[in-house]
Length: 215
Image (cartoon, rainbow, N blue to C red; front, side, top):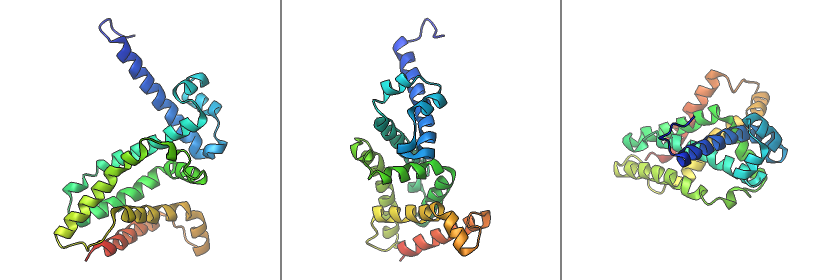
């Protein structure tokens, strides 16, 4: 119960934020498991312990809820990337850390990859409506650009490395190995998700990316 000194509007705001986060967490699980088309609002409401009408009060439609789920997923990874403080690291070590972080984030957040798979199947139709997504991702580009500039200034990195292309390459190296791991493991007759294989993959990716940016 709120104390007599509490601001009722502030309490309501906090309750609303808490409710929305619980709904988004349940939506993340449902959309990641079944994709946008297969996900059910009834199941999200059940998992969140929320009234379905409340979900539609906060998010006017299933499309809007999926967009909010995507935006929340991107906000989480971008926030975690900021915590790397790459601007405080040696440029080469910063690149190593970015590859390592991306790899481990994808490993520990398979739902993120599943959400992106679903959105790509829908031609990014939800993200195209987002008023936040490009602004949310621009600090990442600026962070990588700063690392690259420091590396060039120190005569460690070569000229002409585009920060967006570099990040896409890092993401692709991590993503392809994980999303195709069952087929790759089968055709090559190896368990490519064993701890040893994962460690070898990370080392390979770090050396590959550094081999590109170093002079």
